[in-house]
Length: 145
Image (cartoon, rainbow, N blue to C red; front, side, top):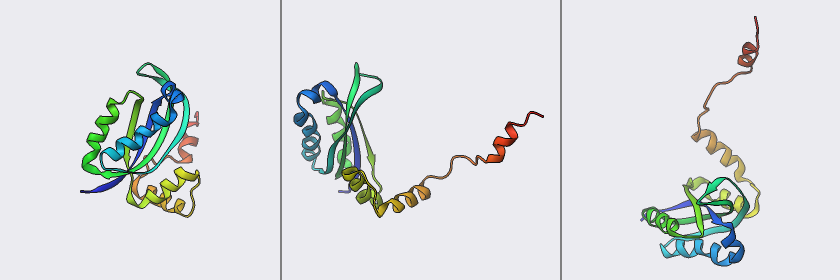
């Protein structure tokens, strides 16, 4: 078994969440634990208007969770959240092991501490620049000669 850490972002039906917040949010932990996972952090993120309607909903309650689970169980976990009536959309992202502590701490407190440089360094290593846009290119494109 390979345990990995994932970031899960869930969008709940805002009406259901408003009526039963503990029941709706508690299902995240229950389902994860049902499949042998461990919840590192689970919290309300925001409630907002959706950019476009999802399953007829115009508003959603965003819930953020960090979880540790066997990578082979993610497919089953995904299926279970697809069947949930209160979850209108969700996404799981694998978290680089070097970033777990920093991301969970940031989600818990809203602040990055010593790990901020580490995150920046890893992002720079992992994500190559997408273009080589230079200021002189702008000047040349504005030239009307």
